[in-house]
Length: 403
Ligand code: PMP
Image (tube, rainbow, N blue to C red; front, side):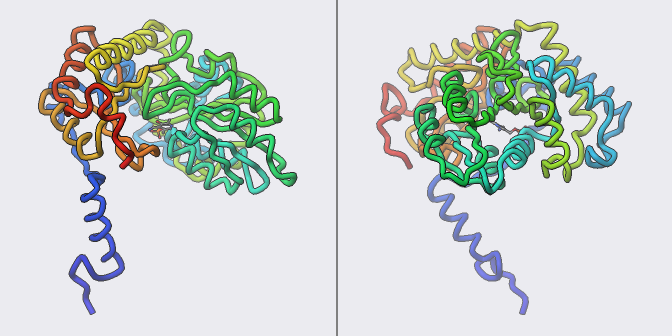
C-alpha cells in the first residue's frame, strides 16, 4: 500500500505535532539571509558576532588563505588525516591566550562540550549542572551516563550540597556551568562555584562560549578573569563562532586531560577535523584581537549602552555581564511579532522561546557589537523600544506567567 497523506504512515504523527507547536507560537522556520541583506540589510544584533570580526577583511583573508593552502575540507578525522600544523598552531595560541596548558580544537563548540563531559564523566560519576546551562552541556551530561543533579540557577551553595550528598559509589564528581549564560547574559558566580567544587574534590567544567573574546583582560575570557585558567582542576570550553567570528570550538585544560580527550572523546575521534578555512579564520581573528585588545572592552560597553537605553524606557532587560542583552517578552507569540516588527524597522534581533528558555519566559536577545558606533547602538535600542508591545513596558512582561 502506498501512503500519500501526511496524517498516515510512520511520520503521520508529525502533522499533529507541528499543529501543536504552531498553536503554541513555537514552530520554527528558516529565513535565509540574502547576500544583499548581508551587505545592506537590517542592523544585525541577532548573531553572536560580538567583535564584528566575521566579515573583517583580515579574518576573511585568513580563511581564504587557509583554504588555498590546505584545501576546502580537513579530509578526515584529526587522528587519521585531518590534523594540520594550522590546527596545532591554533591550539597553541588558544591555550596561551586563555592561560591554559593545552587546547584541543573541535568542529564546533557543541562537539567540544560533548567531548569534555563524556570523556571526563562516566557511569561512576556525578555531574552537578546549573539549571540554565546551554543545551550542549545538558546533552553532554546525558551522553556521559553519569548521575546528573540539576542545581538551581547560579546557586553555588546548592552545588556544594549536591556534591556533598553524593552516593558512596560515585568515584568522580564534576560541577558544570556556563560562565556567561546564553539567554540572559548574566555571569555565573565563578569564585564561589570553584570554592564549592574544591571543597568537595570535584572538577570544574566551564563553558566560556560567551565570555571568551569579550570578558577579562583583552578578552581572555571569564575563566581567566576569575583566576581559574590553568588550574589543575579546571577545564574550559570555548566556541570559535562567536567573538572570533569563525566556526569551531575548543576544550582547554591541563595536558593530561587534553591527551585523554584525544584518545577517548567520541566527538573528536569520530568527527572530521575542523575545516582549514575555519581554523585559519579563528587564528586570524585571535591574532587581530591580541593586537587590538580594546575590541573586547568595547563589546561590553556596547552592551551596557543598549541595556541603559532599554531599561530607561521601562523594558525588563537583564544587566549584561558580557555582550548579551536580553529583554523579556509577554508571550512566545508577542516575542515573534516584536522581533518581526524590529526587522521591518531595520533591526535583526534574536527571539528565544521555550524550550530554549527553560523558565518558559520568551525574550528578545540582542548581541552587542564592538564594531558599532554609539549612534548605531542608540538607533537599535530606539527600534526595540518603539516596537515594544504595551505589556512589555514597566514590568508587564515580568508578571506574565510562564507559557
Ligand atoms: N555553549 C554555549 C553557551 C553556546 O551559546 C553555544 C552556541 N549557541 C555553544 C556552546 C555551542 O557552540 P557552537 O555554536 O560553536 O557549536
